[in-house]
Image (tube, rainbow over all chains, first blue to last red):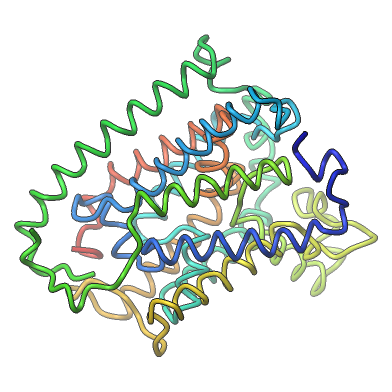
Length: 200
Length: 178
């Protein structure tokens, strides 16, 4: 029963080999889906290319449903899965800052690594910016240390917060994703008609 | 169907839903094997901590944030996400080679802006993403993707506010892209 490494079924020594292999698959999927292009990525915000939404929502739905099934079949103990803790206000602030960075920079960290791999100078500069940003954050950490740790809600799940079962939320999220796929397909068709200058 | 883009100069990308299924299965496999999800920004954090620790060890030790990632018995680079992110680069290289997208160094941008504008914007975007990912406890991979899939409330919050902000400010930066 999983997870395999925390349960000692796969020895810890394999941890980094597995990390590398998983990373290779991750990078391959990102690049093959078109995430090494910043103009592909930002298309999601202007309606001319919804590839980000399609890949992202499909992946979340597949993994979310898969985790519940793995738990149901007894293959995976969901209690041993790492649930990202919630620090509500700092995470909202962080997400807003990332949203602005996304629009201005055109990448997120993972996608920028794959864009560097195929020779994009803008991705190299973006990754340099990441380094500088995290350095600045660390240097000025004492000024906002209190805020950083504020609003700690622990490892709360979405279902616990909403007062519904996580299975129910998975179903709702899947329905929203399917509707989003259809609506964005309509939007994309309309926008592309009037959008001569965009080439992939 | 699509009159604007010629099929000949259109790069060959895999179907996005197929890509999404592959990514979802990979994420599921990652949880099954390691008990945690995917990530990306953590590798740069390790690089920052390592650099500061090498250049000014006392300074790194006195910083309450960096100190928590320094250990006496191994380097901060000896970290799961560092190996994984190195893999992401190799994976991008493999896919780029397979689909013929590895070309000479180049800058991708809207025809309306100069190379310099694009690079400045990319740098600023990177800095913001770097800062935001620390407050957010992860970026689009670790918080939004893996967090939401594992039903973390914080992961969902990061996803909603990141994309929501993107839409809210997209109009002001449209010249960069369209």
